[in-house]
Image (tube, rainbow, N blue to C red; front, top):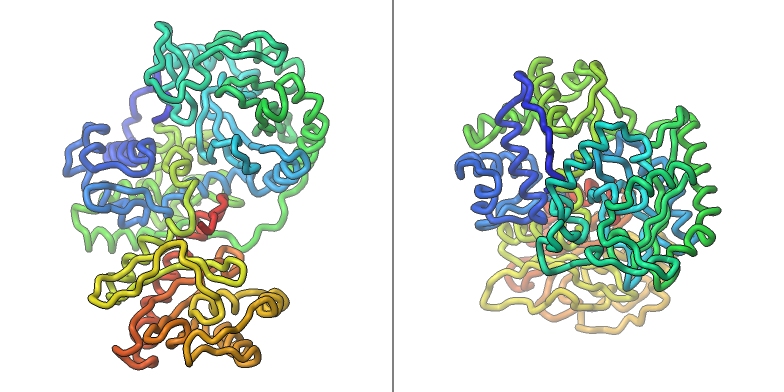
Length: 581
């Protein structure tokens, strides 16, 4: 959950009640880690079970949620809402490359964070993988006092902002509303839970003394120090051992739009050593970022769809699902997808045109989203706020490619009644990273982690065909073509010709080359840059049908499953790194 609102105003008369109630279900599912029993969502929201079921049915239709038995699970398609905010902000696209270079130069993790009320929200991470490293995700929200960026942003707070901060701390003494950070002690010495005490205890500061157990006690003085110095230090304010230094990035008008943090661990650098070690290079990067923001925006690429689903799609969904489709929820989320690169702020007319909604309908959705904090308005233009990332972005930011593929492989197996798998290249082998077996008397015994040589397998040939020519040649030069059955292709010339054909056809069918009686057909999975990053296949026994019959039966549903995997991968990969395993 997000931090509690202490003085939330009543909704305006134009606000859409069903949209507000529906979004409470999505927020509860997001803060529950992305998977919740439906009964738990009913209890968390206080809504009727029938209402929650209709909301989940609508979210499933949108591709934002899956219902698996008694559980609701966030789906990768939901990331398109956070993508709309991140693209509209332009911060990851324009400043992310400089953050990556800084992380490489310092060999430390680097973050971009933006202010969000009296909190700080991460919008970009360039992490270094270590045993002790940064664990925050894009979309995570931290209290302003629990980190380096917050003191920089609080330097611009007015008295109302300070009042809201004090009220929030009084209402939430353990930071329970910020699940991304370990809880702190309350006024009675409690923590709200025995685990992950983290920053609850006083610890040594960079000079050998102790810092306060409660990071808020000296926040005002840290804000003044940051205002004077132009940078802010985090000496284990989040948890013991984690230290950071942050510098604001300002737009051409001098307003801070984000902060860049360099994060380290006391095993590598003490807090007192951070300014000397990283501040010069950090300031150079910030100056580069500010020049980027001052320069004209580069020409836009072909724009992403402003609204992936149009009003006509919603009407068809309503006709099909009837009362199980909550139109007001679909309309509200549709308006968020109208924003994006080059569409940071839009008037009502532009939102209505992008979504196909009537002006009055779009206006009520926008007013409701503004009331809930997902949009801000100057009276004419609406723009998405960082709070949009509350809608599942952090919970989904750790998705791997196998996790994206698994439900689509399960659907494929239900269609074809044979086993389906995903594999990636690992040296000269393929390695299975996802698999859904079918139940037969005679089954194919392969598990996740299984490795086979690439050259005699359908997925291996798809992956090899997807390599650049020079890389493919180098790969084949390291491969010993051993006959595994009487059908295995062992001629380098013939294998090269087969790979060329696979590249042209877009699939590979391999018949009894890995094992007698085993036939499989595979297609590629491509990332946003059209690179082949994985392959999916269907494996079957060769004696049931001819190769041509298997190709005709399996290739269409296999390609459809790969297309669904790619759609989710492209959405997830817009601002996140999706590991292959």
